[in-house]
Length: 382
Image 1 (cartoon, rainbow, N blue to C red):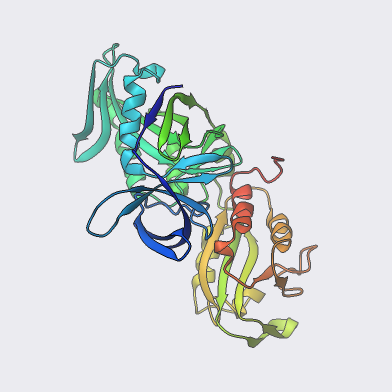
Image 2 (spheres, helix red, strand yellow):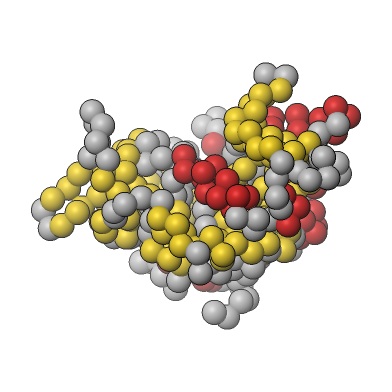
């Protein structure tokens, strides 16, 4: 084991809520709440759950005394500080832990070419001119790592530009660093960013690698733990389709009665509702329709979304197989109720509209079900 301490100190806190892209509210100890800097713009939905442990390090800026640097998920510390990632990669290189880059002759950080800035230029002993872009991957669920966890136009721009540099005698690389010790395979996140996924699959002259590493504690990395994992582009290619299942998260501000087509008048309690549907001939178009206020009422969901209930979020599960019944069945086990026969006329289930007293987005079990299906691991027994 070759331990490297990224920060001198760390402190445990409890996550309360995200205030903006770079600020979270946490509880250090009972009745002591503070704002902490979050150096990560990703969604981090599996980490930023109320009650979840977030590890901080002490800093001193005008706005913050602490910075969030790590989380703990499925048996592993997860490093969240993307600012420090390039320094970590440099340590891996300098310790000759990546075979292709052993004994580098020259290493230059933040290398600019044609108005694009890349993380590293590295000349190796074979005189290859490696141009390297590093991506931090914090999403790892059931041994499956995925990137990005939010659409990334910057990442897409980088890989298109990188792929064209081979003609200029550069060897282009995109490397995913996964801070989860249990990661076994990497899949580009086709559900969140299908354009990035398609580009990664089709650009044949782009060198791609994914490595996991282990954090011994929230601020200490084991350099010797670096391990190259399977790059599973086949699963992404097989399921990169216009079909799939989806979930709509709706917020209902007050108790209301609404006439729902042939179902008649239904009472809806104040709270949150989750609708599970499928669109096997146009997933993106179906979601766009659900967000429109002006439309013909064709399905049960059209009577409540996006009015009078507020559609606050949707989840896409891009798959060729139809899994909406399985998802609804799994979520019904953790829901607080359901609306009988809603959206389930062609289903074996009693309902496809489930009720939650509190926001399901703040429920770890709810997020787990979503990620089970997005990582194609719903049948995995852990």
